[in-house]
Length: 308
Image 1 (cartoon, one colour):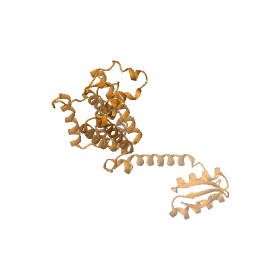
Image 2 (tube, helix red, strand yellow):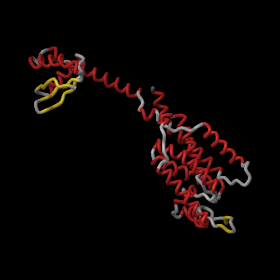
Image 3 (cartoon, one colour):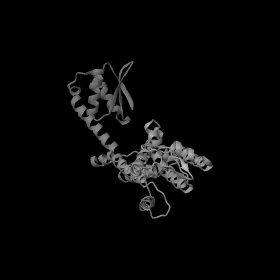
Image 4 (tube, helix red, strand yellow):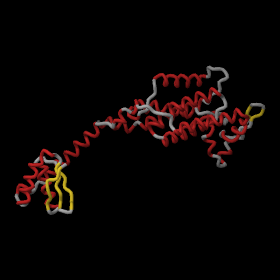
């Protein structure tokens, strides 16, 4: 921008600004110590704008300078509308390419992995009984390696031990169970944490964990289950639907990953592997909630596409 001069009052500055705009000269006015400064946007218009300023200062009451406010207002409104339309057509670069941007393991994802590994190490070190008593949905007592039937009705949770609604998700006592769940979490959790933020991942882990644990308990009337599979299937369902309906979210699942997760879900559900104990209702509840959550999270993107 370039200064063309000053006028004595705000009213005269506004009148001159309107006239310049109608003449096709973009400008701005600003109060300074010397009066109201008039700045033009284009250097190429400086000479013509300077001549208009000289004529205006010589005779501000000239009819050609008056009554331009209405037309100038229309021009400003038209320019604002065009700028907004252009902004809506141009996507933020990070939003456009978010799905192809690399991501690292998130801090919360690492914390959850470390917690699960630490609990497994404690269990393998001879503290399985204590972990079952303190972290499952109700106190599970082992007798000769088998759990005794606990008191019905989740009395510990009703007495205020609300952490038990979530903590079974972090317990793993089998190496393969721990390994597969941590690998899924590192993949799914890290992408969500990188794309959507640590807080949103934390919320999803809490909601999916509590929902899948309660579903498993209500379906089986047993609190003897544990593992992060319900959370992982919740994250999977959310990413699958959200990534499909809202590509700008940056969430993406390779088709092979989708196929593997779905196949494993039905393999567990049909109980085709002998001696494999799986909390199928936790899987199904987490998966279903993730699909619903992903769908509703994608609605704003669907509305934007409809408006375009």
